[in-house]
Amino acid sequence: MDTVLLLIQAGLIFGVAFIYANLGLGGGLLFVPILLSTGVPDKDLAVPISLTLTIATATSSVINHHRRGLVDFRLGRVLLTGALIGAVVGTVFTLKVLNQETFEAFFAAVLIVFGLYMVRDWVKNARSVDEDDDSALTPPRIGGTAAATAGSGFLSGSMGIGGGLLNVPLLVYVLGRKTRKAIGTSSLLIIPTAAVGFAAYVVDLALRPGGFAWPAEFVLIPILMPVVFVGAYLGSRWGLEKLRTRSVALLFIIVLFIAAAKLVFDLL
Image 1: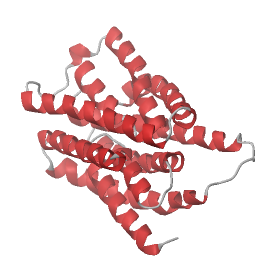
Image 2 (image 1 turned 120 degrees about the horizontal axis):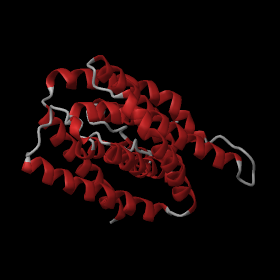
Image 3 (image 1 turned 45 degrees about the horizontal axis):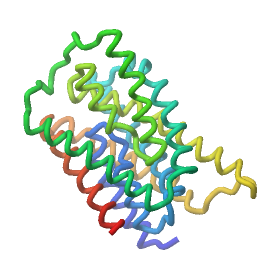
């Protein structure tokens, strides 16, 4: 293991966790490109490693948001089933359908689409970001959102991210949750979703013709998870105290386009 390369990985991933813990995302938007650019050879290794790191990010974020009453556990349980189903489907999609170039193109396209959507919403600024709209919590909306979270699970399993790209907009725009509560609840959903996605990768390894072989690159998991946990814990505490909600939304948009630009650059 190259010590210098490992230190670079740790530094970059710490910074990502620090920021992403404030956004309701696990960090995989940047964890995957960082891993692919710093020695992890392909997506089938980068994605499961990223899934474990998103668990650490989300756990730290949930701890700090829960202390402020910004995690809706009841709603999270309702939405979880669809997300878990989607995580398994997304994992199979990545392992059996996508090659490296297709994976990176697919990833970049998803980031650009959601980034443009968030830019439009941020510019319009027509909705209160700090109040719940309880009138939106109707059974049809909750049921539709529970089904739609299969898409967030799919993103988690297919791209090594937490699924917050869909979770946060669904919680805010469909169920009327204030932005900070949507972020905390999205982080809650990330933990089991990412765990199921990682388990699906391990099962695939066990079922391969040569038998189960633990990839050497997975040594990064116990090394980087504590780094991510600390970065996310410090980042979410700082963000809850210092960042205005509108600033958090702008930060979300910026990191989204940074990740997309990096993937497009790699493809070219």
